Length: 257
Image 1: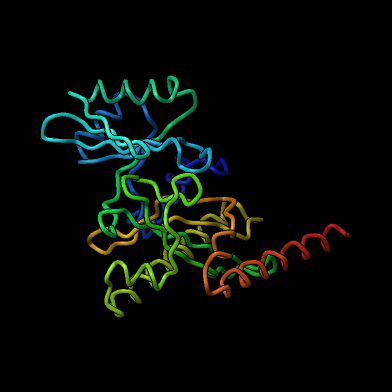
Image 2: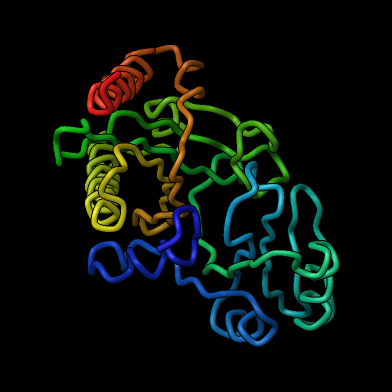
């Protein structure tokens, strides 16, 4: 399995029964698959198989009563049919100059109509097989955007408590959602360890749909922890950094320097 390849991650993780229920259906992009996915789903996501960072090449395609809408960054274009919509995306991506995938779109919860998702960091110490969720935060897309990237799309960063309050969760529902997130993230890390036994840290983008189901949007093999510095409570940043530093030192000792 290729590290960072979203289609490989999908097929590998979907072999696990619990994780399969949390993954949006995903296939490689071609015109036939594009048409068939829109026949089955009301909306789909088109994005690179390997991320270029920042979510700059993500397209949401929505089936309308008359036509197809393509939403990219903060722009919306409506086309008469699937063929025209596909041609527009193909041209916008320079003829799909690299591989793309199609995902079933997750009906994410929103704040004031703007999609919300979460980033979770999962880590283990290099001398342990026990994974733990060491940090989580919420992200809300900027008005008019579909992507919650903090840097390139100017999404809003929220602590977990702020996100749950903005989504108007009851305390009980909020706790249940957080427990479900942790369970899914740890299960994903355990599964990924089968393929990448030396990895000690993963980032997962997690969504919650309108049925309050936890969904894995994306797996990040090399997540940063900078956003945790911007949270008022710095305990998660310290926890993540502590384990990273512990693992770096342990690796150096193993190599004899």
